Each structure stands twice: as C-alpha cells, then as structure tokens.
Image (cartoon, rainbow over all chains, first blue to last red; front, top):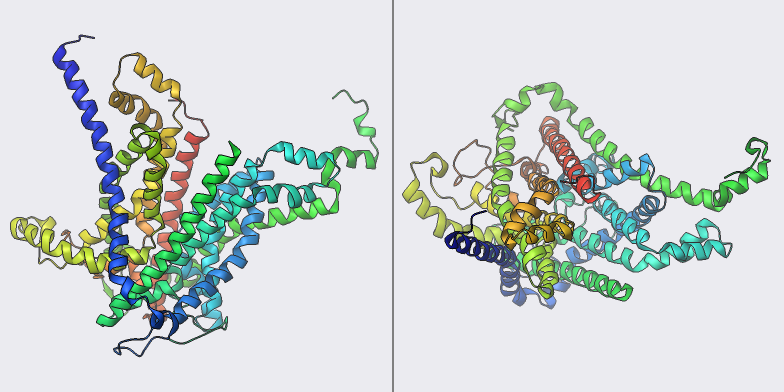
Length: 285
Length: 324
C-alpha cells in the first residue's frame, strides 16, 4: 500500500466524519421520542383532571365529560387478555426451553416469531369473524381475546429465554433430591425465572394497552358503563382514534388527555420492566 | 453403555431407564406444555381459515380481477384492491428508504462508537419509539406533524416543483408523504434493535485483525463489521418492512384515506391496513365486508412471508451458521 500523507489525512477525516454522522443519526432517531412526549404533556396535562378521570363522555358536541369508562374498559380487557394469555404463553415458553430441540419445537419457535409480526388489524378481523359474527354483537370478550392473541407469542418467547437462563445446577439439585421433573419445574425452575417472566409479561401488557386496531371491530367502544363480557366496551385507544377524527375542538382536547394517560401507563410498564431486568442481570454478575 | 442384554430388560427396568418421564405428573406436565405450544400453530391456521372463510364471497364474485381493478365503489358494489396495494407498496418502500440509513447509523453508534456508559440509555430511548402506541403517533401526526408539513414543506415544494409528477397537485397536508414519515419513525426501532444485536455478535477477533492491518475505525466498521453482519442486518430490514406493511392506526390518521392511484407524494392515498380500519365498521353489505376481509387475507399472507424470511435470515446469523 502506498502511504501518501494526503491519503492518510483523507482516511482520518473520513473516519471522523463517518463516526460523527452515526452520532447524528442517533440524535435524529431519538428526537421524536422527546418531541412527542413534550407535545403530549403540553396539550394533555391541563385536561387530565378529576372530571376527565371520573365521568362518562357527554353527548357529541357538548363540552366536558370524561373517559372513566374507557380507562376502566382498557384495564378490564387487558386483564382479560392477561388471564387468557399467561398460562398459554408460559406453558409454550416452558415447552420451548425444556423440550426445545425437537423439530416440532423449532417449528413452534418459528411460528411464535412470525405471529409477532402479524399486523394487529388482521388479528382484529379474524377475531371479528370468530366471535362477533356468531354472537351477533361486538363484545368485551372479543376485545380481550384479540389482545390475548397479541400477547401470547410475546410471553412465549420471553418465558423461553428466562427459563433457559436458569442454571442447570438448580434442576440437577432438585432432581437429585428425588423431586419429579414436574415438581422441579414448578417449585424450582419457574420461581427462579419468575422475575424475567414478569418483565416479559409487563412488556406484553404495555403493547396490549396501546393497541387500537384489534379493538376497532371487536370491542368497538361504548359511551356508557359496561361490565358484561358480551356487550361492547369502551377503551382508551379506540376512544382516542374516534375523538381525533371528530370535528369537535373539545374532543380533540380530550383525545390529547387520553393519549397522555395511555402513554403514562405504557411508559411506566416499560420503565419498570427494564429497570428490573437490569438489576437482575447485575445480581447475576 | 456396555450394558448387556438390553432386549431382555423387564418392564420396570425399562421404565427406570426412561427416567423421570414415567411419573404421571411428569407426563401431564409434558402434555400440558405441548398443548400450550400447539396453540401458537393453531393460531396461524385459525387466522388463515377465518380470513379465507369470510372472504370467499368476494373471491367468488371478483376472482383475480379484484387484484388489478382500480375501482372502489361501495355504492355500486364494485371493489378492486389495486389502489390499496399501490398505497401500501409506495408508503412502505419509501419509509424503508428513509429508515434504513438512520437505523444503521444509530445501530453503529450504539454498538461501535458510543462510550460504554452511553449505550444503555440510547438503546432505551430508541426502544421507547417502539413502545409508543400507534394511535398516539397518529394523534401527534394529524394535529402537529401534518399542519407543520403542509405549511413548511409541502406548500413550498408544490410551488417550486409542482410540474414534477412526484409533487403534483395542491398540498393537502394529509398525504402519502405524511404516512411515509410517520412509518419511517415507527419502524426505525425494530431495524435498529436487530442491527445492533447482530453487530454486537460480530467476533472481536474480526475487528482486531482489521485494526492490526492498520484500518481506521470507520474502515473496520464498513469493511469488516458490516460485511460480517450483513445477512442479519438484511433480516432486520425485512422485519421492519413487515411492520411498515401492517401498520394501521397512525397511517389511517395521516394518509387522507382516498382510493386513488397517484404518483404524487403530496396527494392523499390509502393502504390495505388503513382501508380495513377505516371502513370495516361502516361496511353494510356482505360483499363490502368480504372485500375488506380479502384485503386482510392478502395482508396476512404477505406479512407471514416477510416475517418468515426475516426470521430465517436473522437466525442464520445469531445461530452462527454464516461465517463470512
């Protein structure tokens, strides 16, 4: 290689410029997070008050009212989704971690990853065909089922990773004491992996809270209170969508408030989940 | 291993050799786990079946013409998918073109350039992009980004480059351009996360060899690290593309929802996902519903293929099957 001083300088300049550009990319990519959060707080904070959190929506065009039913509805359906998806997701994850080398397990793992990428609107249409059409009504049940289909593959994959991370010595100690395999899983391995599984479940919950597309034609939305599984139910994401589309100024204001409430729930779940993982990894080291 | 007379083993011996799997509780445990795992496969079949069932009416009525017809007329019950396929293709590909360089730059920054203490926080903030709900992106897009874009970008562009087909027509604000920008922001975290992982998986010895030959850091990144990681990065890009194709709420809120095939980025458009979200609850006739479901079926098949391909590529790298 010829080493002319000019060429050397060019290489050094190119190096500095390129590395600097990568930093610029990072700043540009991070900027939307702060911009969007700032707008949410600025436009929403004044409208998140007692009336908003505790009262029902007013009729269209009338100012005031709130989204109490939507907030409760979101928790209701996400809770339902959790009940449906937790056993299945953890069971499937344990299968992948413990019996994960068969051809069938590879297939299941592949399907779990592919399912993670199925658009939530498609899940909404499928559940509509499964539950809404035969029941002849939009329902909270259909909403919860649709959300659970989003959560199942997420919980499966994190459970697998966490159960895999449990040291084999723990399993061997338990088996060596004469415990059956099932008992070892239940009393030793799963408790050891619990922290990580909880983290994964929290991230899945955060995703489910924010999903509007699968609820549009399953839970639909509701302007009144509902606790019944077989009737339409209000929820934050679709309410934000409806209000943002509406022509009413006051509904726009409430949409911002609802978005602020929603993002707070989602961010709290995310931050707590990540902080707890980090601490656990530190403890392992 | 040198046990004699294996065939002559008695039943209890055989059971003992098979070990723990003989207890009824263990068998129950195993069966339960298999059943849970099978639910996932069942889900894929179920989505496909339900979508196909619900779209048979449309498939029978229009046949293959559905895919090439431009007409979308609920009043006269004529449905064609082409405007939505067009909108989905244009927005997702353009969003990818914007997102890939930014994501790669960010991934390189996190994995190779940033000081150690900065990596975690930057990764965390980028991951928050993926945590923000789609409908919140849409809300911000329609009330903040769209008016701003219209005034400061689209009107000047339309005035200066109005003759070019790419920027024809009046500036609406809600447009393909808005959808592309929002989509790019939304898929960046996915591409960045995968790229960062595969870059971090490049063995240190590769970098050291390159430094040893006198390469600068950038030369090492470009010629050694990115080359080594390229299959995995391609997987991440395809994964991000799958997200862009299926993204619904934010796109519906900023794209303008008009079933036209237009070259112009300033004009409103429509995508497969957004037409389902926007018109499904208003669809009154069985044929209308069926046509929308057929779009869902197509979307399902496309995203399945995209994700399968992406998974395949990423796995090859992280499992270490690719050596160059």
